[in-house]
Image (cartoon, rainbow, N blue to C red; front, side, top):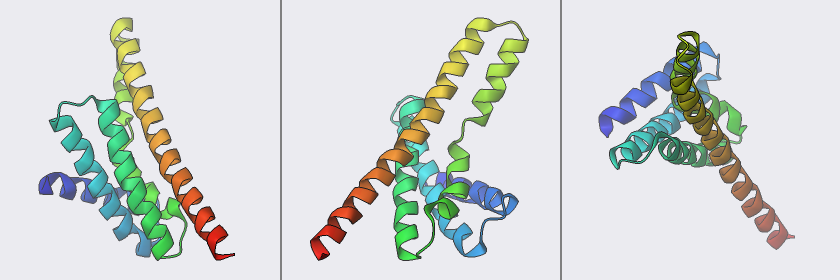
Length: 145
């Protein structure tokens, strides 16, 4: 798992640099991405499908990014942008198009559905964590008023 964390961390570092993320946020985003990637690989090790593994990985990194946003008083996106990119199903998109071009429509459809499922899993995980965080802080603000 340490190797997977480091691989996720390093890939996030590259994406953070490429996308000109603020230096103060890159390290924290890389940590979130490393934990997200490790969670993804761990779920694959438990023989879960890629969609479930992607969902769990995105949940983990999203929670860490929300915590960082509150602690460091910055937008969640500056932490989430480099963190989420290792989970983005770019290879799935590539293979979907490759199979389509090769006239292998069954494989193209199968890979396309899996890729779409992975993308939706990421979106839902981010939405769930963001919604729960907003709800919690709304309740906390209501208690203090």
